[in-house]
Length: 144
Image (tube, rainbow, N blue to C red):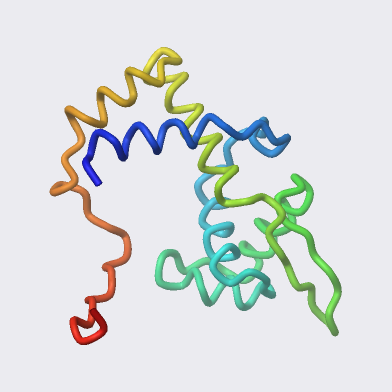
């Protein structure tokens, strides 16, 4: 897919959802890090979230607990008692959080213009300079 058509598709997707979740404020960086772990785990205890975050950030158990409690109060996660601990599950969809982040980016850095963002992505952002957070697995040519 061409870079130009990708950025148009990307920006159009970001502005098509009007769910209540997208009207929320952006999550602070630590809460977002917890959500990333919870999205990948789908449901988890505090200890499991802490362990999943260990490669990115080594936070204390009580810090992760506090962050999950904040996210619960904000309605971003739910929790249910299981034995002596709680199991947390994301309620805020990853897509909704991304849409809100892109909306804010457009409003604050591109004067509310989707076209300006598309132009910037097409002309300024070189995919060669982007370092992926996770390296993709090599494709096994025998499967092709």
